[in-house]
Image 1 (tube, rainbow, N blue to C red):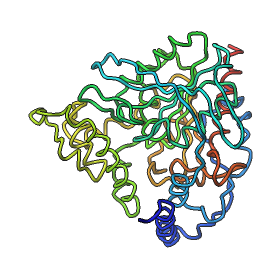
Image 2 (tube, helix red, strand yellow):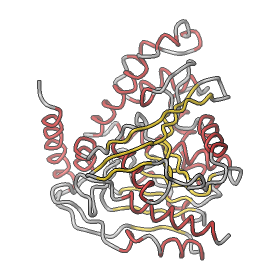
Image 3 (cartoon, rainbow, N blue to C red):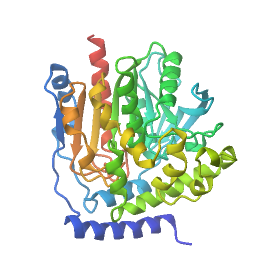
Image 4 (tube, helix red, strand yellow):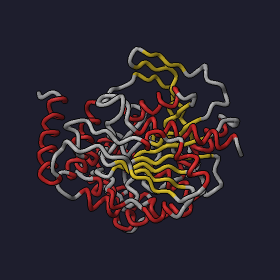
Length: 395
C-alpha cells in the first residue's frame, strides 16, 4: 500500500511537469498582490492597515504554480489540534439540521489556547468552509487559531453532511441556497447579541456567503465579510474543471460528494419520480454528475447548466452593502482568474479585491510560516477584521 505522502509527491511531480510545460519555470518571481477598490475614504483607511499588501508575495522555491501549491497545502500543511463543542441547530426552511463547531481549546507549535477566557462581547467570526470542507480541515483550523490570537471567537458552519454533520431530510446544500446561512447567522447573533459579527468563506463557502450578502443587503447582523478563492461564476468554473489536470480535482471532489451521499441515500428512497437519481449520485465521478443527480433537483432547476448560470455570486456583487474583502490567486486552478468580476467589485465601494500572483486553491504558501504553516491570507484577514473593529468604533 502506497503511503498518502507518497501519492501526494507523485501527484505533485506530475502537476509540476505539466505546469512547467504550460506555464514555464515553477520557481516564479516574487510580485506584489494586485488591489482593486473604488476610491473612498474608508477604503483608503482600510488598505493602509493591510500590511501584507505592502510587501511582495514571496513564492517558496519549487511551489511556483497553482497545481503544486494546491496539492502541497492539501497534503502537507500543519494540522493544529483544535477541540470543538458541537451545536446542532434546526433550520426552519425544511426542518433540516446543520452543525456549528465552537472551538474550546487548541494546541499548536507548543502553544495552548482556550476560548473560555474571551469576553462575552468578543467579536465572532462565522466560517464557511469549501465544497466538501469542514471544521477538521487545516485551513479552517488555522483561521480558527488566527481569530483567537486576535481576540475573536470563530465558529465553523458545517454544511449538511460535511464534517459528519447530520442529514435529517432529503436535502443537502447548493452554491446558491442561503437558507441555512440565514439561520446560522441569526442563531449566532442571538447567542452573542453584544458582539460584532463577521464572516469568512472559502471556495463554495465563499460563493454561498457572497450570495447571502447580495440577497440581504443591509438587513444582516454581519458587519463585514471575507471571500477567499471564490469561484464567482459557476459556468466558467465548470468548464475549467473539464480541462487538463483540473480533471483530477473534479474527480476527487466528485468522489467525496458521492461518499457523503451514500451515508444518507436512504433518505432518497422512492424519490426517483421527483427527478432524483440516487444511484448516479452515489457513484458520481464528477461534481457535475452529482449536481445533475441531486443538487439541481433539490433546488428546483431544470438543468445543471441553469443551476450553474443562476448560482454564481458574481451576479450579486453590486447588491453587497457591507464591507467585503475578496482574495483570489491568479493561478487558482479551481476558481479561475478569468471568472473574477473585476468591474462589479471596482464599482461597489463596499468591496475590495486582492489578487495574489500565486497561491493556487486554498494554498497561499507564503510568508513567515511557509511552507507548512498558516496560509498567507490569515494575517491579511486578521488585519482586515481588526480594521473593521476600528471602523465600527468610529461609527
